[in-house]
Image (tube, rainbow, N blue to C red; front, top):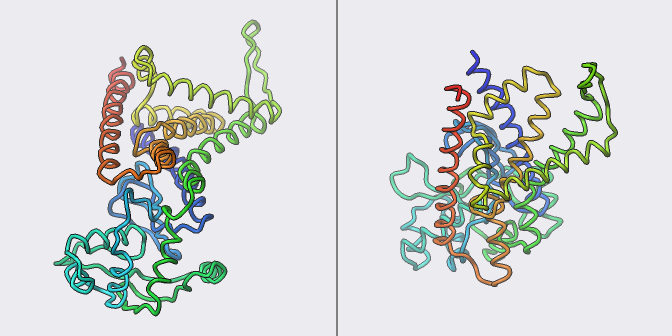
Length: 368
């Protein structure tokens, strides 16, 4: 029963914090008119949910993490064949890679690259598992009144309701291509892309500060006199609560910075926890009451936000570092380089995860 409660409380805490983190990315992207094709709680995989406008909201089978699929974030140069491939697909509605290649007079590989990029844009749908061939389709369109109003206001193509795979010949292929491009992350200036990347971190830190204010200035805290043993309930003013929140954020920044110092990295890792430790602590905090659990979530939110600032892909901080490099050098980081950087980053964090999990098993399971 204890293990089940640990899983439940950890899922509640992490699920909520990941939700607001990805919600930050989602809201920032939508504020700048960028399409978000998916907003999921959990790791990529089988999911259940619903579609509202152009975004599918849902929950995946593995409730660890989450993601908002902001369209147009693929690295490297754009395919030079996007416009004519788009026109071919929309004229047919449903088409194989080979059919599109023949229509456009390009190779199958060039058609494949362009179609995959259009899928990243949310302008096409990649093959289903049941497809015998590489079959692509036009996406279903069920616009909300707000989307229609915004499209007219911005001079974009007004979307009409249609089913996935429906033929929709384009009267002006270039205008449609331009309207789709303007709804992509990559079409934005540097500062807007940066806001989208850092919005999730900002929301995590903002939640933490607000949670500290609620705990210290609304719920109050119990303080014990070490000499008399008397316990006194205190409520502090909101400004001091905010100061407590920023002080804790600064402390976590210092701890994360120590990971990059060979002399302090091992000690910092030894004082950190994996998902196992988070599960144990979340149960303990929840059993101690709302104040304790909310304080724990505030601290965990800070950790998630600050860790995401580490300049290593695929973390938000890593993507931001790539954006800064591209802005400074005026050179795009290729998909191959980005993939390699992300692979190295995942390997490093995987190793860190294994080490911390081993520590937590020793602490909480074996009693070490």
